[in-house]
Amino acid sequence: MEDITLGFLLIGAMVALILLGLPIGLSLISTGAIGVWLIRDNVDLAFRFTALATYSGIQDYLFATIPLFVLMGLLVSISDVGKDTFQVAQALLRRISGGLGMATVAANAVFAAVTGVSIASAAVFTKVAVPEMVRHGYTMRFATGTVAGSSILGMLIPPSLLMIVYGVLAEVSIGRLFLAGVIPGLIIAFGFTVMIWLYASFRPGQIFVDPAHSAADEDAAMPVGEMLAKSVPIACLVVLILGGLYTGFFTPTEAGAVGAAGALVIALVRRRLDWPKFWRVLKEAGLVSASILFLLIAASLYSRMLSMAGVPNAIGDFVQHLGLGAYGFLFAFVIVVLLMGMILDSTSILLIMVPIGAPIAAAMGFDLIHFGIVTIIAVEMGLLTPPFGISVFTVKATLGDPKVGIETIFAGTIPYLAVMGIGLVLIAFFPFLATALVK
Image 1 (cartoon, one colour):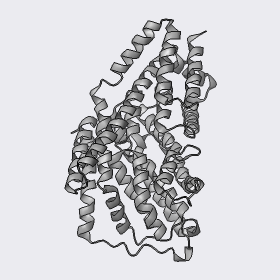
Image 2: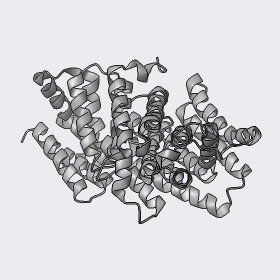
Image 3: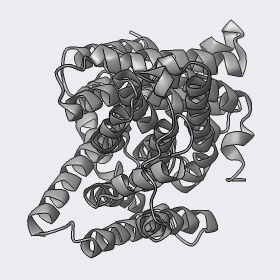
Image 4: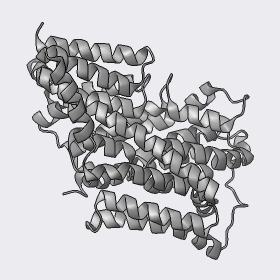
């Protein structure tokens, strides 16, 4: 059997193992090791290859970024920074019809700039924003859909764990990826607010229980001093992290360390952290980081096996023979990612698709930074698509209301998916939107 044929069979076997319930990391590392064994017909080489991938896959100093940003996100989450950010946005936008929805998007965008995890955003704002929106006459469908829809900003606006994973897999600068995500993230956040304004102005029945009483929230006034006090912590973290990265003063790893230290100071100053909570935060950060790092080790072996089998080159040659061109390939790649988003989580999709797609994209002339932003937007859309839709399920679980069906939340996310689709097309066809800050 030819190596290329074997490579494609192993990809199919790996996907089948995942669908049968085997964890993604075990699926990747087992098919990678077996693939090396079968391709080279040497079981000792397969074991040595696996050992090499385990050591070299995460030995770089850069990988310290992962636990540091995870720790920072967890510390920010327990410090009530998300709640304060929402209250400030609510006060600023209270006189605009649909202002609470816009406040949720704005707060999620700011919160994303210090956490980098969509699930954390979905959980925090389900508790904070949904009750407020329902109390002010918004439908449950719109309220939950807005939280789930805007939570995806957590993986697009830097720092982002998905960007770290992509940067490792595609071997591109994570710092440049962080900067590249700023403009696309702001474009999509702006698109969300425009969409909410259009609904509130022209189709109020879609978002309000009683369209005749769709007036803005008038009881959310906040003294300027209190507003500043609640804004300063999150603003300092954003300036510290993004400012340090943009000026080149910090490397991504150093930015993670400084951000985690800043988040710890905020939690201590606000007296939200005691020893039991701190121990829980450390344990959770360790568990999350270890799982991500194991996945990267598995993906490293899987990627090397694919290269050994010649799969990326074979797919690239096939696409060129079809005459699809660079954007034809990009369109097909995005469609596959969107379909995979219906059954797999974001990290799994990147681990499977980036080792295949990135070499082909580079050969076709794409800037891998631009390609990465497009890929991450497509992957994030998968967080909102049934039947998997992990952000939707997070909102449902956090809400804990048996009267709110999962289909209600999925229906509420449809407008946000449409806006993301428009944003993806714009960024795909105008690469400078992703690369303007990294040139």
